[in-house]
Image (cartoon, rainbow, N blue to C red; front, side, top):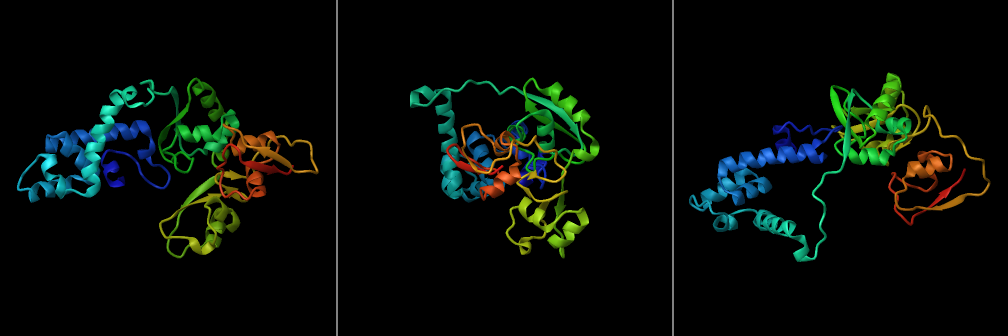
Length: 301
């Protein structure tokens, strides 16, 4: 939970959620489990507390008149927790000998990932375009960046494909400061309206609604974090306007039907046909950039 995560120095806000980072969240989880074991001196009770909270386990012990055997106090715990502990032990048993249970064996080796330090705000799509990386791959390597932007303050160690660290660092150094970010983040306050927010940032109501998948200007909620594009409408991080467009393909009077293949992304298909991801999304009534193998896209150039 966010409150527990913050106790272990994980950042959880509208821009960054480090619970999604497999490395940082694992380190925090190990520290939390260690602290819980120090309190209960039992791995069953530690797992129960990890699942439902230390307070509920303490109350279960009190209801059982001081009993500290998980299997004897299990009936006093939430139903989910009663099953969580044996399920965890089962997972442990299976993971140690997956072949015995008809499951595949995976190599016990982490993916090769490089890290590049980023100071200040950076839009992942800007970096992807300049460095010839796929924005979906870059986003997948950095799941903590829930808005595909690095924090405006401080340093963030960006994960990049292994072996591309120097290239990304050189590309980053060549991006002018004013071009590193194409959008702003705005936390909705009482009295805010899309029109007022758009005027403040020099954007448009249509751009704000499209970027946040909002159907109506009345859908704003106080405390909500909005993406505010700098220019015209953006769909799930894709925009037009000041963007440097890909070289245009030869015009065609007839629309092209393209069948999505495994590994395709909306931005890659758009570049292939000399159009933008936003245009492609609009032509196919897509509300975001999600596409699947076998989907048929209509491309009008």
